[in-house]
Length: 225
Image 1 (tube, helix red, strand yellow):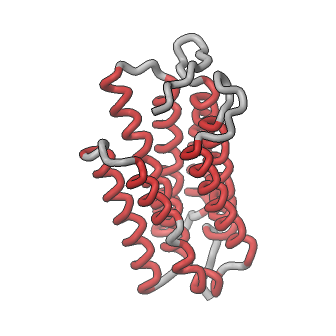
Image 2 (spheres, one colour):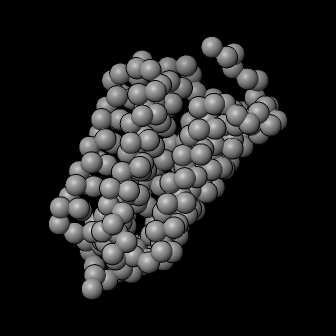
C-alpha cells in the first residue's frame, strides 16, 4: 500500500484545493437548482425531476467539501469518506432522472430509472454496511451505473438533437477519465498541492457542468412531439 502523501493545509482546512473547489461547486449547485426549478415552471412533475438532479449535485458537492475541509476525528473521517463515496451513486442516478423522466416514456423510462436507482441503492448500502469490500466492487458498480446510457441511446436519439447527446456523452467520458486517473494515481503533478486527486475533482466538476448544460438547455424545455 502506498503511504499517505503529505498534504498542504490551510489553517485547519485539510485539503484546501479540493475543499474550496467543491465548496464553490456546491454554491453553484444551489443557484443552479433554483434555476432548474424555474426552468420547469408550470409542470410539477418536470420540476421535481429537475429538482432531483439539482439536489444530487448539491448533496455531492456539499458532502465532498465538508469531508475534504474539516479536520475530522478518525471515526468521523471514516464515516464522512463513506458518505462522500456514496454520494457518487446518488449523483449518477440524479443525473439520469430528468433525462429519463422528461424525454423517455414507457418501458424505456421505467427500465433506466429502475436500473440507476437500483444500483444507487446497492452502492449506498455497500458503503454503509460493507465498506471493507474490495475497491473494485465500487468501481465496477459506478462504471456500470454511469454507462447505462447506451442502452437507451436509440430512443434518446429519436427525441434529442446531437448537441445534448454530445454533451451527455462527453460528460460521461470526462467522468470516466477522472475515475481512471484516480484509480491509477496519475498524474502526480505537485503532490502536496495539486496532484491526481485534485485533477479527479476538477474533472468531476467539469463533467457535471456538461451534464447540467445539457439538462438545462435541452432536457428541461423538452416537449414530446
